[in-house]
Image 1 (cartoon, helix red, strand yellow):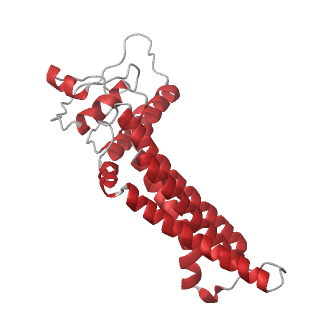
Image 2 (image 1 turned 135 degrees about the vertical axis):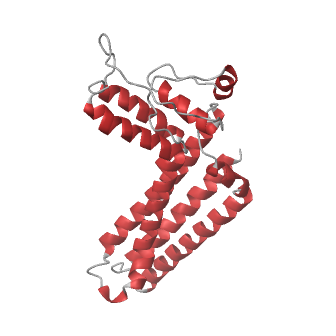
Image 3 (image 1 turned 180 degrees about the vertical axis):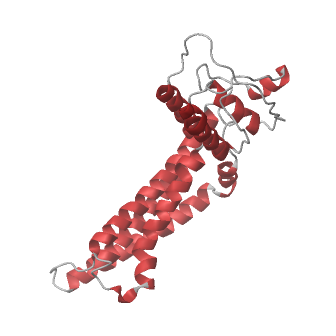
Length: 251
């Protein structure tokens, strides 16, 4: 019915939140926040929803998608509300967002973190090799410092996604999240994590030792090896983090 829903809800907030939910959790809902829901007792026992606020609408769609339930949408006529609405657009919209994002660590942490990691490594290694004649004015030490920061930040964000996924599983929220992270745990054994982290850490420390040795041999003058030193620092930090996280994942 025309005028039954504010234009900002109909054309902005509702499509945005519904699209976010569908993207993060693999659902296919056209309106994730409709209050008209019906389900069997067996379906309820499979979903086992826990929310008691406005985000309950999102929770039902997420759990139905993750539980493999058959979902059908039936068109309804949305009439004007009788009485005063208790909905607060910004407050209740944020409740849906803050509920969804921690339950989707792949979209919130892992993918952005991997993009930052790749960008940081490319900034230190790949781009200077592809454009060697760009000169130090373009790829100077400040650019390398920024790239090192981005790479380390990206890996920390990835690990935060892993920690969040484990927290969701321990707290009984495994049914909300999508499975790709769980598949990775089967291949990321303690021994493989320690081996990969150890190799990176040793390589980084070896390069740092070479830089230090060259500085000592040349009379301990001005240090002109900032770029390989920053790259070695990045590799060593990534390796150390990987090794320690390996113990956490298998404790």
